[in-house]
Length: 324
Image 1 (cartoon, rainbow, N blue to C red):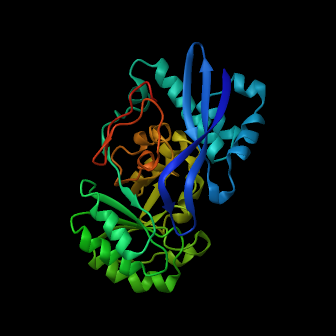
Image 2: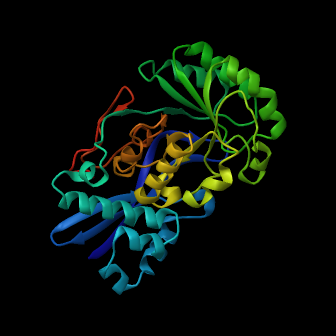
């Protein structure tokens, strides 16, 4: 088996603004795994807030033992690399490689045929009028994810709700709120029919959520990186945001998905931004998910070929020439 990887930069169509950063472009790695005439591929960018970069991912992958690569499989990679971008890239490329070798593709491997899903579309953090205007510009998108920090979140939410009374709204605070802000907003979020509140508090403060009866469901993102974090968050959150870059690939993502189903937790499938190649494996985990947030390609000026087909927020299954 031969492993190769190539850096790629994707420019954003507009600044992607969250409570913690403003993104104008992303740097990713394209992974290729060649074996017996087949090539499995994947895209990974790692977890930037944990310090992962393209350079650190390359260094980690270059450190893999040649003999280990010779005997590489999905079980082995779980022990060779920790959760994060490097393992995600290799793991998803392994799944793609095996899917290309299987008659029924990824559906045959997982026992879950991939059907179309509807994604949220993210509204970057901005002033209330600008966010409401952007929401009104996309009437065909019925599911909106609002990036809100602690500065006038209610003003932004009310403006967006007035502009889009029809839309499902999810809020992502990216850990920027304090407990007092969160508690003051609870009844307002319920009144304005917010479907989910994602990562309201910093990860090191979410012990305050233990057994909290909050007016809207709470979702862990930064607080739950991989399946190793699930039990710690069981009594703090109603939902888990599964991201392949965080947990280290499709293998661990499916473990998290299964745990959520067994423990009556809502499932959100998210992304760290990225092209159609980064989103395609996540569509497997997204089957039957309560919330799908795989709009990364919509934020890019260009995409891989062939790309995913995304129409009015509906993502079709990936063509086999793309992945799976």
